[in-house]
Amino acid sequence: MVQNGGFQGFGYRVVRLPRWAAFLIVAASVLVGLLFMVLAAGIALIVVPVVLVAGAIAAWFGRRRNGNFNAGHHRSGHSAAGGGDVVEGEYIVLDRDRTNGGYGRR
Image 1 (cartoon, one colour):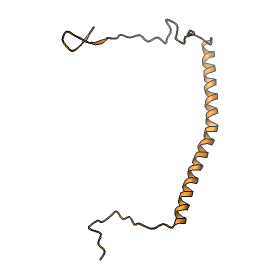
Image 2 (image 1 turned 180 degrees about the horizontal axis):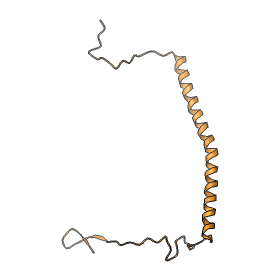
Image 3 (image 1 turned 135 degrees about the vertical axis):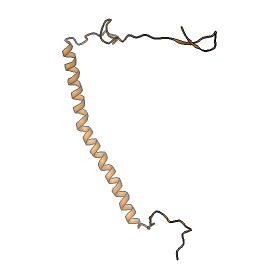
Image 4 (image 1 turned 180 degrees about the vertical axis):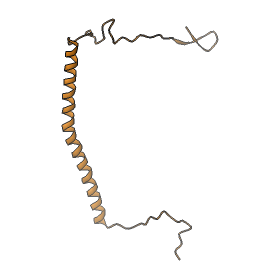
C-alpha cells in the first residue's frame, strides 16, 4: 500500500519531461509570441495611417463648416467672450473658521 500522509491530491501526476521536449515547448512558445508581435505590427502599419488621415479629414471639414479657420478663438487659444465654450457657475470658498474651530462659509 502506498501512503501519502493522508493527502489525496488534485489528480495531478508529476512526469519527468525529456530535455528535447522542454526545448521544443519553449521554442514553440517563443515563435507564437513573435508571430503575434509581427501580426500586431502589421495591423498597426495599416490602422495608424488610416486613423491619422481620418482625423485630418475630420479636422479639415470641421474648420470649413465654421467658415473661418480661427472662428471664435483668440491667439491664446481661449474662446471669445460670449462664445459657447464659456462655463459659468456658482462657488463657495471653504475656509477654517477661527472663531469656533470648525469649517464655515464666507
